[in-house]
Amino acid sequence: MELLTLIEIRRRATLNGAVEARVHVQVEGATAKVTREQKPYCELSLADACDRMTLRVWSDHPEFKACELLQASDFIELSGEFQQHQQFGLDAKKWKVRHLTAQERSDLLQGPPELRTKQLADWNYIGERTRAIADPRLRALGEAFLSEHGERFRRTAGARSYHHARRGGLVEHTAQMMRVAVGIVPLYPELNLDLLIAGVLFHDCGKLWENHLPETGFTMGYDERGELMGHISIGLELVNSLWRKVQTEENARAWNGLVPASEDVRMHLLHLIGAHHGEPQFGSPVSPKTPEAMALNYIDNLDARMEMFSAGYLVAKPIAERIFDRVRPLPGNLVKPLEKFQRSPNSKTPQGELL
Image (cartoon, rainbow, N blue to C red; front, side, top):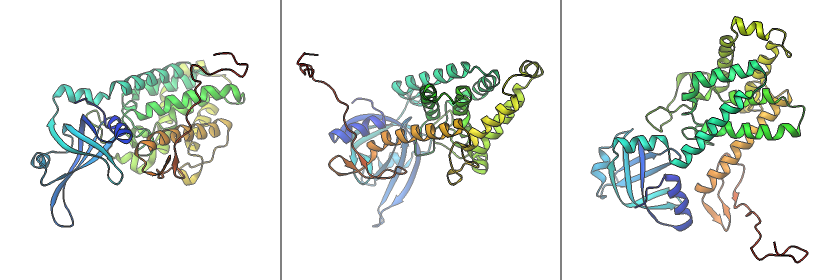
């Protein structure tokens, strides 16, 4: 059987029905339960680098005893027939289970090759854009952040559930936001590109504690600092801490007299972090009050929502032809997007000439 990821299995099952495959996953939880008729079963919560599934193992299943012995953080292979169930989501039948080898565990934690390649490219782009910041104060701040917290950054999710909710998701989200920022600044000359790029880099830096994943798995735990303060407050504190570190005596002399003043640069960057959710009801202590803050709020929301659409089509239940049930927090039912126009090889131009 072909080795696939959960999201590949889900995609194929949605399109073609039953899929025979192997999948490598980590056990996030194994819970003994009973049905209404008091029949025992085991509920397994499984995860890989990109997706999750819940597997219910009934007491008459040949692997029931083996699943009763599974512990959270175990790494296993499921091999069998998978289907996308309208009520229960991704499900499996006629399956077997075995523990992964050490090498298989290592490969799983690194993510599938396609995702690994994408996240490496995104990480390199973040570094390039940070080093390209012209303002030496913002550049030094960004480089200090990536140097000190880079490894943690690369294991952090963009959110807990709604968008980029996977190991390394914050890197993908940040890089794409930087690309959008670079794309719109020529259209709006009033925007300060250096400040906007720094705002993108730091807007979710507090999630390194709120949405951090460990080196050894895909389970996003809970951090006391993240719970007590939230990522915006943590981000403000982190930027102030890094700012003090880069303000060495040598840098202070070199930066003295720069325009704008260093204190103005710091305050405007803090405003971007504080205002990036847009409104107090969404967690921002202040509303956007500068062009860069407004742009950052829209760029953040745009990338998050595009990711929600992409993920939503994989899990949404069909309710009519080309219409799918709502996936929160998107505002309504999903509709299959319009296909991109493609000319056929023999199509003609309006003048009658072959293309």
